[in-house]
Length: 556
Image (cartoon, rainbow, N blue to C red; front, side, top):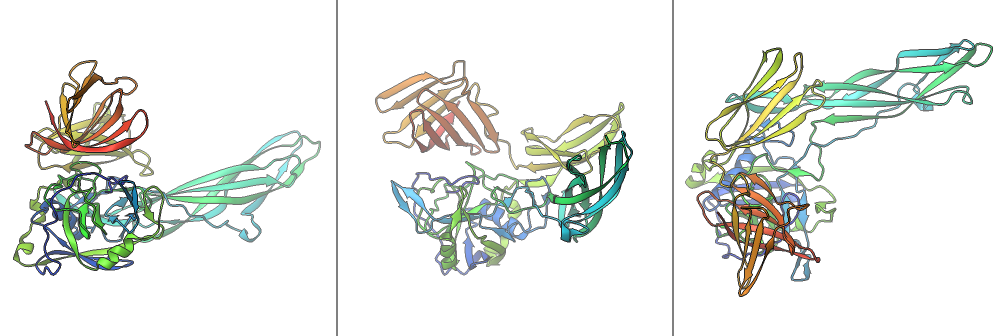
């Protein structure tokens, strides 16, 4: 099924779906209102409590989340106004293409984008000229003419976005300012075109709008000419200035594009809770093992290939015809985004019955997204910035040294220590900057090792008979063996230019390496307390072709 970057088709089959009857009257319900109609989903908080808590908390604004720019939001409903950004209406199974609508995916927010708008040409726009000026140039003299404040232009500056964020354990109400950068392009030329060629100038303006209304500002472009009169008499020139193009760029505005992100955190999945991907279930999309978050998909047919890889956490009770109609809309591009946006106007959560009312979103082991405390002071002639980092957290530091014109993000990575600590950076004396540190605090220590080096991995592929693939990173050269039945192969893993690498996440990791047969990209679950865990793997063979693989593994 869909991950946040691509659709995955994985081949595990689990038990059939044990779900409540469509006439279920008690429980937690999510009422979806979309641009193509409404439907209702019953949420299984007993067999998928963590996924339901994440969905409900984001839908109601009960839990905080981070956008791709590092802003922390609390009290803001995540799904309202979003779109179904991916629709899978065809899939190939055993060489057969199925095209009757497979699934619809939503729950992603667009990454920071750039919007463009064109401004009018300015004064005397009807004849294409912004303005003109006259210079008198003495003979044999190079004249520098600086024309200040000649061309006025108006910028429509985007409004800020109201938001709340957490700082020092307290919720702060503020506005996420919109920063508008305007670049004006001017084309100037002289009346004696045979002697003086056209020149191009540009003017730039910035405006930070912290109000909730669009603000118009008038700016002035300044230009100059350099004229050399090689004649024997003074020369009077008419210089025309045409506004050829102007663009505005709104920074930190959320613009709908095809690069959609999660809510800023990862959660443990419940992919093996016994619920199957039958027609009409809602399930958590992911980008690998134990990376549940905000993105979800709803199936429009039976898709058993996804069982055991994604967390099913409910099913549609009414309005399945709306889901089906969305699942067959026209799509475009590699991301399978609908040609016409399907808007999720809002999601309303209803709790019916005592058990549903008692379900506590905050008690299901979800990560906590918040701002870290920062202290800034002077030390030894330098500026010292100190941030307090929580235990078991992911941390991002952002700094703006140009008056909020742009932010330089720095990923400080994951901290697996069991106690909070402080991190310090030093800046030159007199440095002026804005700082922000956002953290994702996880409820338990990481399960994955810090590195693959010094470890031996035993993978047991779901083949018939089972394939035992062992990769050892305990010495150089690294070694591998592959045994299936009575057949066995072995060799050294490639180190250059295909050196193995390891990426660690909360409760999961990515392992990539190559041998003389193929390239292997493993996504590894590390469920807390378990010795044997699940994996998925993409195998790309050197001679062409590839396939997906699932199974279990141990690491020593």
